[in-house]
Structure formats: C-alpha cells, structure tokens
Image 1 (cartoon, rainbow, N blue to C red):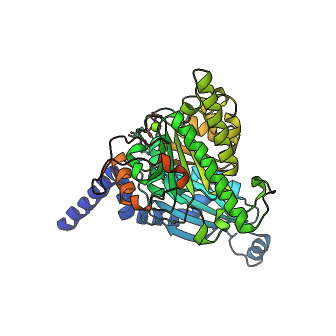
Image 2 (cartoon, rainbow, N blue to C red):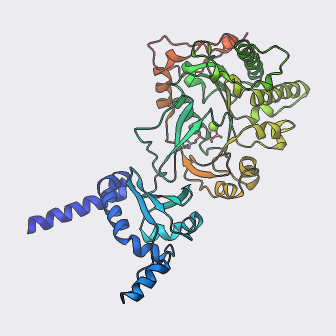
Image 3 (cartoon, rainbow, N blue to C red):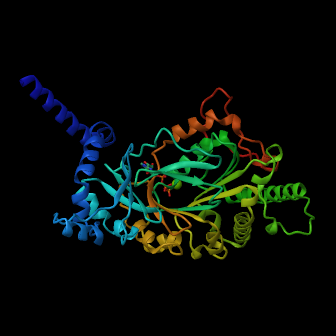
Length: 451
Ligand SMILES: Nc1ncnc2c1ncn2[C@@H]1O[C@H](COP(=O)(O)OP(=O)(O)OP(=O)(O)O)[C@@H](O)[C@H]1O
Ligand SMILES: [Mg+2]
C-alpha cells in the first residue's frame, strides 16, 4: 500500500514538473489522455452550458408525451471525428438544424475554459460541419515543428500557428510577400527559416541585404547571387529583369506564340513547361527594403527610382517566369516615395511582427483585415518572433517561427551547397567563396564579384 502511495506521489510530482517545465512532453505523456477523457465525459453538459444545444424535435416530444416518458434532453452537435494530436485535440462536429458555424466560433472562449484547454479555434469545413481545434498548452512559447510536414515543391513549412498547425509559405499560391516589424522583432529569423527551408529544394536563391550583408552573406554557399549595397542591388535587379525576359522568350518559343503578344498576356508559366527545359525558379530575398528606397542626392534618387521600378516590374511579371519576391522591412509605406504603395499592392502575402504603431500595422493589413491590425499591435515586446500572418482571403493567424540560429541555417545551407544553380545572367553577382569545400563556414563576409 505504501509503495503504491509513493509511486502515485512520484507520478503526480513528475507530471507536475513536466507540465511546468516541458508542457509539450507533459501533453504527450499525461495531458492528452486526461484532456480526451475530460472532453468526452463532459461534452454534453459543457455544450449545454455554452448554449450549443438545440431542443429535441417535435416528433420526439410528441412521442414522449404519448408514451408518458420523460421529456428527451436537448441535443449537442454530433461528434463526427475525435483526434488527439501532438499539441491538442481536433473535433469535427456535425451541427444540428438551426445552428451555424458562427455559434461555435462565438462560444470558443467559453469552450476553452470549460474544457480547461489553452486555446480553442473553429472553422467551417463544409456546410454543417465545423472543425474545433484545441491546444493543450501554449504552442508558440517554445516552437517545435512537427517531424512530419507536408512538403511540396516551392512550399516551405516556416512557422507554427497558434492552433498547433503548420504555417506554410507557398510560393506558387502566393508568389510575393511582405514581412514587416519593428527592429528586433524577428524578421530576419523568419527569413532565415525560409532560406533553410528552401535550401533543400530545386530553387535559386538571390539575396539583397543592405545591412552590409550581415544576415545573408553567412549563407552565401546556397545563394546564386548576393548584393550588399544599393548600387549592386540595382544592377542585380536589372539582371533579374533580363532573366525574366529570357524566360518569357522561352515560354513563347514553347507555345509558338508570335512576339507580338505582350508578356503580361501569356497565361502559362514555367510550371507548364516540360521538366527538361523548365528554368529553375528564383526566390529574391530582400532584407531592410527601406535602404533601397532612401536617397540623399540627385544621383541616389535616380538609383532609387530605378530599383523601385525594377521591383515593381518583377512583382508584376515575375510569377509566370518563376521569380518570387520576399521583402522584409521595418516600415513600407508611402513616406518612402512614389512607387512604394504600388509595389506593396503586388505583395499578396503579408506578415507583421511586433510593430510600434498602428500606421506600421496598417501598412501590412490596412487593406486586408482591421482585426489583424489590432492583433499585430498587441504582440508583446518580449515574445520576439511572434507574428500575424494574413492570407488573401482576409483571414489571419498568429504564428511563430522556430528559433533557428544563424549557425543552424549556415549548416543547412552548406549541406545543400551543391544544389546552388549557376544562373548565367546573375553570374557576376555570385558570391565568391573564400573557403574550400571542406571548410564548414564562410562566416567572413564575401564580396560579390562586380561586373
Ligand atoms: N521565432 C523566434 N523565436 C525566438 N526568438 C526569436 C525569434 N525570432 C527572433 N528572436 C529573437 O529576436 C532577436 C532579433 O531577431 P531578428 O534579428 O530577426 O530581428 P529583426 O526584426 O530582423 O531586427 P532588425 O530590424 O534590427 O534587423 C533574435 O536574435 C532572437 O534572439
Ligand atoms: Mg533584421
């Protein structure tokens, strides 16, 4: 008996300790069973208390009256599926007549503390079916990506969402994206995760890092072209435009379209070309975009206009040619001069890390969703890396990228260095690697060879 008590105390203490120090492990050992039992046992009464039940149909009431039986209970939504996951529970509910998905969404906060879960979100799967995702703990506190993710070409699992699902950056669905955030809010870490995610794929990476190259140059071995100042950036972008024109010529030749058809009217893109001749897609990463748009004199102003015009052209026509823009900056509004709002309108994917004021949040979401603006302002300063990601449908999610260190990203890039395609148009900007192939890290800044 005493041995049993000791064992019980030990188990409870271990569970308590795990829950405090390692909530993810606690969830997978004790939490998931306890929570499943709690949800299944209390389901009917909680649904009733949260106002999610409907009265029984009239024929059952009439039947009960005729048979002189007690009045049947109100009915909660049917559980169509119950699935425990790595981070929580997923319930599929079949709604009763008279209920709608909004009822469940409106009750999600009540459900959250009735079931003692950390978070509850719901979405409509199809008419009459709602998926309720519950998380057992704060999954964004220490982000751990699941070991198994759904990888497809040009689709990078980049962060974790608040409901425990994986947030993907899908270049074919959303070609261009803008990432905003105050200084030290986690933009570069997000971008680093993207680079690490893209490194094993068949893609050329092009980097423009006007912060003297401190963020992207250490990853140089996986980059086909790099620029660390606005002058080189201007030339690099011009070279990208000529590559784009070349790709359009290739698509035309393949389609046998005469050269009288303007580029923007060609419906096909590189993914329609046969595998053998398809040009490799290019992801252009720009860190600190404002550096490209600022100027202090006539000469620099000319350069600035040239850069912004080229970026707008790439954003307008790049998708079909397999050129995708990934732009990061602290602010990206009309105060940076003409052309900026036009460029911004082309950047469909929006992510905002912590911002200091509403105007910055508006630059990301003002034209998409006012709720997302509010959510972006409310990101606390101490949880760096937390961000709001919007999608083109007006929906948004709270996400956080895993904390990938520069060293981890460098190692990933070096491991996949042999995948770096050599693009002839961009050969002049290919980073010159100082170290031999055995030396692990070119941590010193490598200057690009200028044309
Ligand atoms: N997802 C994350 N999880 C945990 N910590 C993070 C995360 N993202 C960023 N951080 C922390 O925040 C620090 C600053 O991040 P980062 O360099 O990405 O900021 P930034 O927005 O690029 O800033 P700046 O505008 O000054 O370049 C990082 O060194 C890291 O310690
Ligand atoms: Mg940065």
